[in-house]
Amino acid sequence: MNPVTEPSAKPKLLALIGPTAVGKTRLSLDIAKAWNAEIISGDSIQVYRGMDIGTAKIKPEEREGVPHHMIDICDPAHPFSVAEFQERCAALIPEIQSRGKLPFIVGGTGLYVESVAYGYGFADVGSDNAFREEMARYALANGAGALHAKLRAVDPQAAERLHPNDQRRVIRALEVHRLTGTTFSEQQAGQKKTSPFELCIVGLTMDRAELYARINERVELMLAEGLVDEVRGLLERGVPEGAVSMHGLGYKEIVPYLQGHLSLDQTVELLKRDTRHFAKRQLSWFRHMPDINWIDAGENFNKNLQAIHAIIAGKFRMEPEYNVNQPFDDGGNAQ
Image (cartoon, rainbow, N blue to C red; front, top):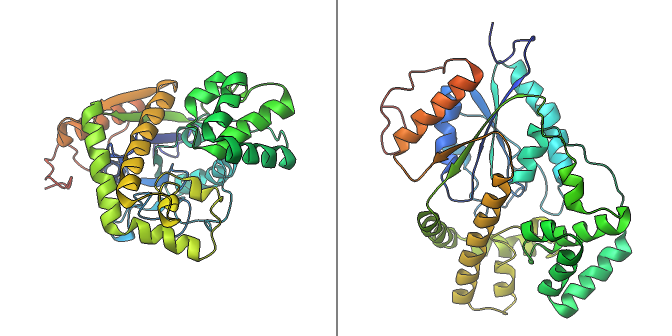
C-alpha cells in the first residue's frame, strides 16, 4: 500500500522552511520529484496575483512539471489571512493525498506553516475598526516606532517578533489585547504543538554573512528584473497603498520612492536592510518551532540534498521515487 495514503496511519506532511534567499526553491524541486510530492507555497504574499518579482515567485516554466499550489490565488486588494491559508490547505492536502502524492509545504512564513502543521485554532476575537483607525492615525502622527513601543509595553514577546514597519500586525496585536485582555503571545503560547500529521520539517540555515550577501544579490536582481515597475503597476491598477499585500517586503519600501520621498539609492539600501532584518526575524521565529531537522544550506548542494533525503526516508519509513544517490549538476538536476 502506498505509504502516503495508508489509512491506518496519520497522513504525511513534509515541510521545507528557512529564511529568504537561503535556497528553498531550488532544493524543493528536486525533493518534490524524488518523493512524488506537490508543493504548497507557505508564503503570505505569493498568494497574490501580479506580485511576482518582489516575492521571488517561481515562474511556471521553472517548475519542472512539479504542481505548485497557493500561488496567484487572489487579488492584491484582498486581505488574505493565516486563517484563510489554513482553511484552504485543509481542503487542499486531502486532494493531494487522494492523488497518491505527498503534500509538501515550502515557504518562509512561519505562522502559516505552523498553522497547518499543528492545526492551530484561530478564535474569532472580533475587531474594533475605530481602534484600528485610531492606532493608524497615531502611527502617522508619531511614527512607526511609537506605535511599536505601545505594543512592547503590553506584549514584549510580540514586539520582539514584529518589525515596527509591520503596522498591520502591530495594530492587530494591540487590538487583540484590547478586545480580550490577553496578549497575542499568550494566545499563541496556548496553541497545541502536536500535529494531526506524520510530520517531517526540514529547516535551512546558513552562515549569517553568506546569507546577507545572497540577500543583497537578490535585491539587486529584483530591481534589475523590474521591481519598481511592478509596484508602480499595482498602484496604477488601484491596489491601495494600505492593502495587506502592499505591506509585504519589497513593496512597502518601493512606494516611498515612487512618491518622491526617497532616492533610488536610499530605496535600495532600505530594501537590503529590511530584508536582512526580515531574515533575522524569520530565523528567530523558526527557533521557537519544534520538530525541525536543520541543514546548513551553505555547504555543498549535493550533500544537502542527500542529507534531506535521508531525513525524509527515516521519518516516513519509505523510499524515494528515483535513485537519490545519482550525482547532480550545478543546476540541481540529476545527471
